Length: 114
Image (cartoon, rainbow, N blue to C red; front, side, top):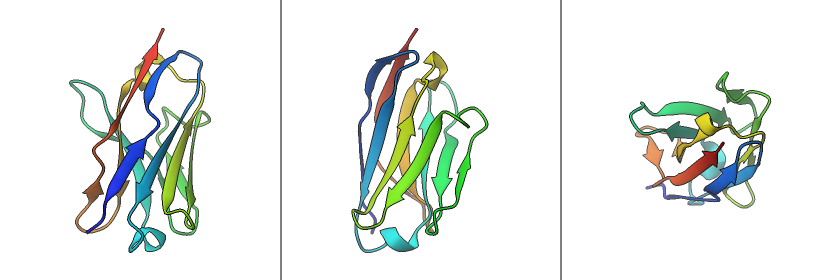
């Protein structure tokens, strides 16, 4: 069983920054690729970024150059630094452990005002 707890969401003006954190249970974190997804109202959940155990990263085109995913294996935590936020980044952001089955956190809401 993997438990994921997100934090760091909130309301921010366009152009601002937020850092999301996801604390994971220790038993599997270091051996698991981690990812952030987001889902806006009426939209499907989409991959934002992922990071492998070795630190390789992938980003959605819409966030490249603005968002940075990182992980701290000593703290069992994955982060998403979000800069230059846009209103279209407004969504609930979910942490995901890419295992079989997938494990999801409950999400944290990010709202970006124009």
